[in-house]
Length: 327
Image 1 (cartoon, rainbow, N blue to C red):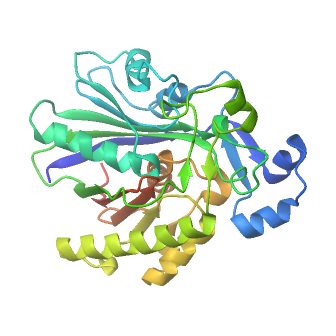
Image 2: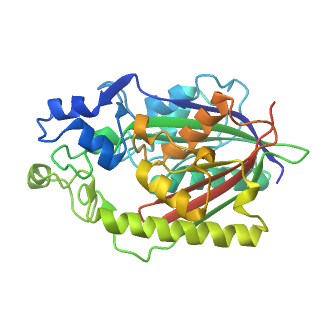
Image 3: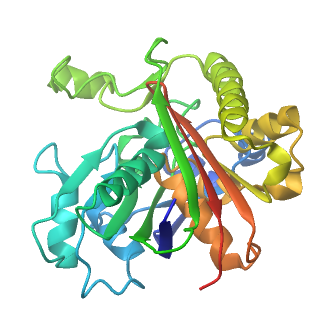
C-alpha cells in the first residue's frame, strides 16, 4: 500500500488522578492497593473542567505543520463536545484547515481509531486527496459513574493524531482491517441520553446517562476469544505470523487482560506496549496514544513491524500492520 505516516502525536491532560485521589474525592470504601492489584491501574489523566474533546484533539496536533494541509479529517470519539454539530467540524475550525474536504465523526467505541484510519486510507486511495488527518479523542471522565467500583477506576482522557499521505514507493501502512459482528448483547453501554431513552431528571438521578458495564467477566472472555480468533484468521489471510512482528499494541482496556491475551497468544511480554497502569482506558484514543508513545520512546527501530489491534463495544474489531521507517 502506497500510504505512509507523515507525523504522529498525542496529548495527555495535565491532571493526574491517582487511585487514592479517587477514593478520597468520591468517599469510596476501598484501598488503593487493592485497585492496583485487581484492575492493574495506578493513575489516569483527566481533562480540566474547561477542556472538551475537541481541545484534546487540537492539542494532539501541536507539532503538526498543517498550514498547507489539504485533505479530510476523520475523528473517532464517543464523547463528542455536543450531540450536534459534529466534533470533527469544530476541530477543523480550530485547526483552521483549508478547503472543503469533509470532517467526519466515527463511533466504533474502543476500535474507533483503526476505523478512522481505514476511512482515511480509502479516501486517499480514491484519488480525492493526497493527505488525511486521523484523530481519536476522548473525555471519558465526564461519563464515569463514581459509585460503581467496577468501572469508576478504569477510564482516562487522551487524544492522538496521525497525518497520513500518499507516496510513490511502499508506504509504512501495510494493511488495515475492520469488522463489526453485532452479534452479542451490549455488555458495555451508556443506556440513556439518546433517542432510545431520552435524558430526564429520573435518568440523571439513576445515573443511566453514565457508562455501564453489565458483566465484566463475560466482557473479558468475549474480548479474549474474539480478538485472538480474528488476529489468527487475519494474519493467515495476509500470509503473516505473529513472529513477523516486533511490537504489539493492544487497546488499553485492562492491563491484566492484555497480559493474559498476549500470554495465550504466545507473545513475548517485552514486545507488548502497556500504559494502562498510567493512563487507564482512553477508549478509541488508546491505540493511537500507545503507538505515538512507542514511536517517541525510540524503542521502535527502522524496519520494525507493529501490529495494532482493538475491540470495542458493538462488537467492533480493528487491526493494522505498520512497517516503521525513520524519516
